[in-house]
Image (cartoon, rainbow, N blue to C red; front, side, top):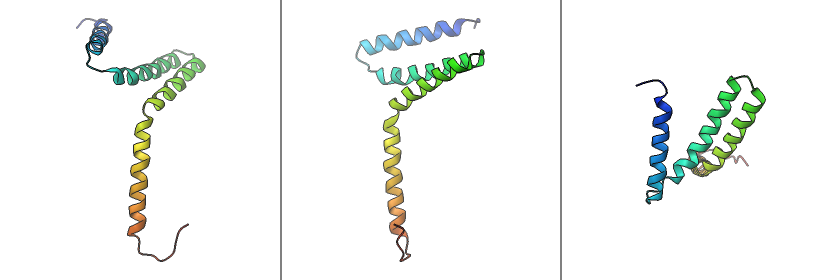
Length: 99
């Protein structure tokens, strides 16, 4: 593969995903995750090229957007952690209360 074909392949894949989305194969959730990840990668590239302030701002913005997109996972993780902690509290056989 020649140098520079990576961008061409990336454009082909993104274009194909857009067409599939228009045809009814919903891939919007994937774009919702790809865009913040690309922002983070752009921020890292800007950071490495010497502009640490601008790169840091772009990374933080991308991180917050990604956190907003992935917040449902945090809710699931918190709910599972509460259940596991509650079951472990029931399994204890000491007579003192912690609260």
